[in-house]
Length: 148
Image (cartoon, rainbow, N blue to C red):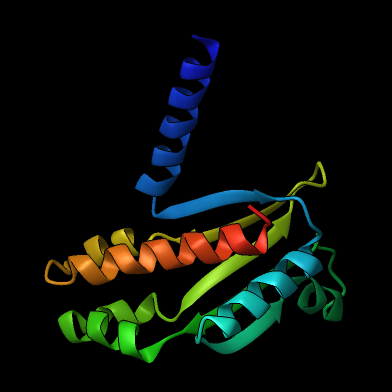
C-alpha cells in the first residue's frame, strides 16, 4: 500500500509540474557532465545544437555568484516548423531547451518545456501526433543522458 501511495503522489507531483509547462527530473551527475551527456544524445538523435549557454560563467563575468546552471538550446526544423506553421507564435518557445542546474543542496536537475504545454499555449490543435512524438523524444533523451 505504501508503494501505491508513493507512486500516486509521485505521479501527482509530476502532473503538477507538467501542468505549469515544465517537466523536471533529477540527475545523478554534475551540471557539466549532465549537460555534456544531454548534448551528446541530442546530437546523436539528429538535432541541431543552437547554443550551450553557461549562466554561471555569465554571472561570474559581471562579478555575481550563481550556482552551476547551463542551458542547452537545440532543435529539429522538421518538427518545429510544423508547430510554427500551425501558430507562428510558437517560435517564442522554440527551439527546445534543456535547463540544467544545481540547487542549494547540491542536487542537479534537468528541466524542459512540455511540448503539450507549448501547443496549448499557442492554440495548436492540429499536431497532436507530432506533440506526442516530441514529448517522447525529450523524455527519452533525458532518460538516456541520465542513465535510466
